[in-house]
Image (cartoon, rainbow, N blue to C red; front, side, top):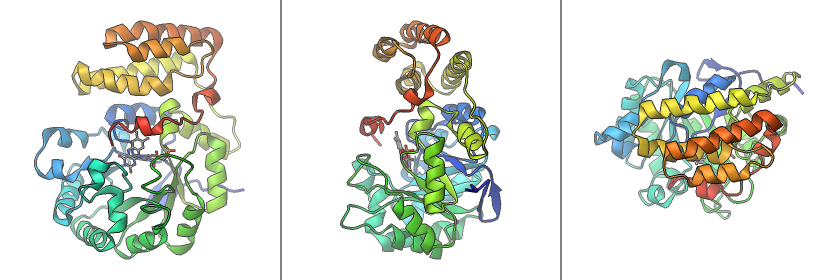
Length: 350
Ligand SMILES: Cc1cc2nc3c(=O)[nH]c(=O)nc-3n(C[C@H](O)[C@H](O)[C@H](O)COP(=O)(O)O)c2cc1C
């Protein structure tokens, strides 16, 4: 099978067709920089950013929009309900230098859907239409949209929504093939990605449960999608994009050395410390550690101890010991990217 080598968003050629999925509490600039360094990401999407925060001048929200040049091409993802605030926020994001604006129509969290945003928009297509037309009219960069399958399994409407997105000038649609009610349980339905692909002519990306290069290749060939998003697996293994690209091209996938993993871990810590106070750093470091410190035989107790630590200083000796064992015994990346059933807990209040 010939796999796509690139994809196009409104005339912008992006390669490879592998996208770092937006993840609130994860894909901040610090994480995006280390992921990008591992190679072969065609497009990065920021964690979602509240239009309420952006348009009311919340400094922390504005801070979330910051990115460094090496993160390009980058889509800034926004969420909200009110079409005027959505438009205004999209203008702010364009001004901040985004290459694309991504509209979130997938977030299942109550604090988002209660305000009418995220996956709630899948139940309010007139409002979604208003938002898309307002945003499209206001910005000169392409608008993309990320959706879920539907609200629940009785109201799966992603094909209708994808057509609406195309009609309103959306330049790409991404489907995470779970319903809102499903949350992160079960599996993403990739048949719906294929169905959308057959019904619209804008590019389609699929999202959900890609854990290794073989999963990505299978999804490309089963659905004909233009690109795939990779989320959780990239936390455990940010080299997954490079490995996928190489496997798609018949090459042996790159295996990072334990030393490289160690250096990447500390580079991430350095970026975090530049970006936030120490009490924020520990939360983010634990988020990474829970996924990244896996795959070394007999080292689970070190990960557990690191995750129980009260401060970064207290954590690091466990981390160092983990990487010393990794040097000695090696890291099994397959083990590292085993499907994590605790995604629900990982969603950091999203
Ligand atoms: C911790 C976490 C945060 C997420 N935050 C966002 C978000 O801000 N915007 C969004 O569109 N999707 C978000 N998602 C959904 C992911 O982008 C992705 O669609 C989903 O996790 C399925 O893909 P995966 O199996 O590759 O992780 C989040 C998922 C996780 C696990």
